[in-house]
Image (tube, rainbow, N blue to C red):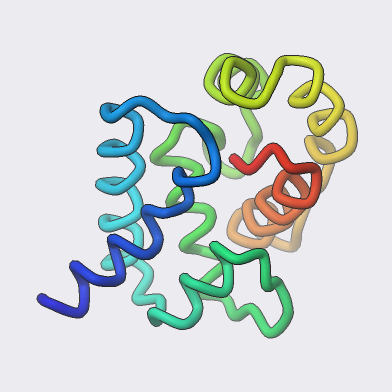
Length: 131
């Protein structure tokens, strides 16, 4: 249990780079915790994803990304929800920045919904509009 709490705290730092309300941070932390438990990702894997280290990613990490993005409302059944992304991220990083990222990222499709989620997360991360 102690390990899970530490891991949840680490992954919840996804929200740390942007200005989120306390409620948004709490929701992100809860979503991350549920997805960590569901997908069984290791501490090092979660930290690597959080830090933008995308090499040597396994299916668990990709499915963690899918779980987190679905729980956050950005994905539904492997499909990006551009209106939700714009609504939730636009006020934080800027609407134009999000729209530019959407142009580059939203058409990405992976081999399955976990791979798609990972590719989307990676693309948005690289556009400095982390979802």
